[in-house]
Length: 233
Image (cartoon, rainbow, N blue to C red; front, side, top):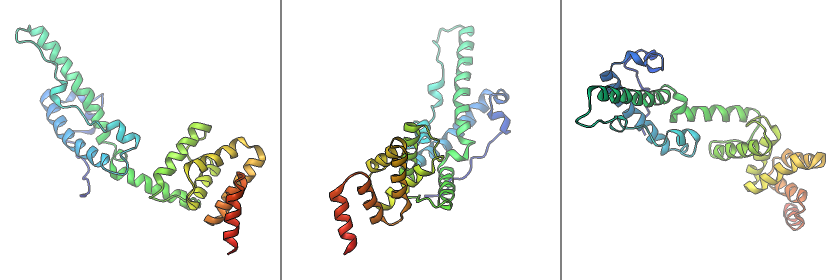
């Protein structure tokens, strides 16, 4: 896929704000709207076809931007000059509102595919620098789990070291989301003993050791026994 070129504004940047848009004539506004919409549609299409199609950005802009004809307030042929003037003013307001929404998107590189990938790479680099097991392949699962933890326990996305450690241990050992949820619940609701057991699970790096300690912590005796016997062979 060809690299997306930055959108170049045809007018001063201030004219793309609520305070400067009045500088555009109706003709200029319509022409720039059409030009910007063409670029925005291509950008949104890339986003919807990418690994970020499930993100809030894709959901917010996924339906694209309105065509000019749908923003036009029509009048009857027998409408009076006053009625036509009112319709024209209403049309201008409609176009300005959608123009501003589109301008916010087009002037925000971090909302486009390249910007989202750049931010993901920066986040992964930061997390791995702290020793966390986050990669491009599991980044979406990581953000979903952290958001789930935030909603359930009120922690900010990256604030809980132990929550990130739970995710990393589960990923290394190939454990399910349900297993992560069990550890999260034990850590937050199991008191000091629960926190200690979760810390014991996340402290080891070996996948087999993580599975063994998980089985022991949650009373899965048969699973733990099988894992222990397998480790001795």
